[in-house]
Length: 247
Image (cartoon, rainbow, N blue to C red; front, side, top):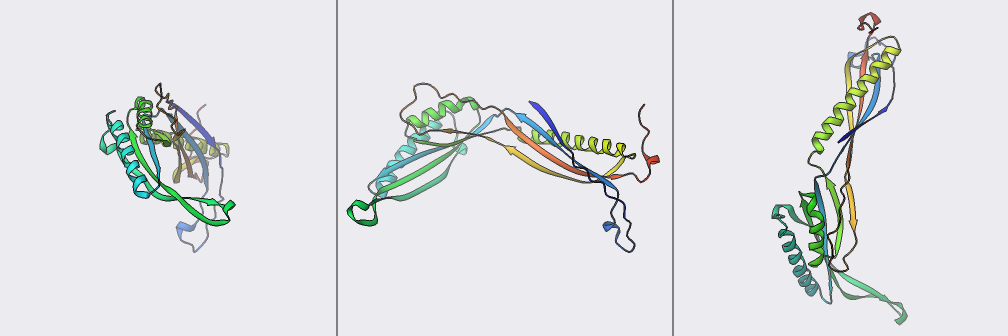
């Protein structure tokens, strides 16, 4: 795991304006504002795969029956790899007519040539080294579309906490540096806000053209978890209240 810190300085020093008669919450105080970004990269250890079966037939009932047979075979192949029922769920199921136009016959009205049934199975994989074998097993049993492969990490929450703490520390350090350069120092924090940017990795696999001869190679790479922190700190009203500088 590597930690990256990117500082984005945003300095705003507001002049003190004690307006008479206004509530204390509306009185502007001297303050300094900065922001910083903490970025943590982690190696994925989880994945979500969307496996699709698409079937065509002259009638909707025939297409549905063929699709059901193929999907049952795909699910049996997935279970054979140790994937339990709680890790599988249907994410999409649709039936629609396939229409064609025959303008050369002078008929502009579409004709129903058959029906298409699509069934997509969502599979959660908890062992990355299973992905290649799972894809090949599903494709060999009738799956003809892999809609997406999304890598995730079980450490996403802890990595975000680490990035958050580092970003806050960096923003506070920069605020202190700016204040000292202006002949003062920072006091208590007035506000802290965050903005996350979690970028999962996606991979695509083409429709099957037959059973694979070798296991499909899968490379998970790294996930990037980014947290941006913006903060405001009160400026000391008198420089004498600041701690002495180190020699």
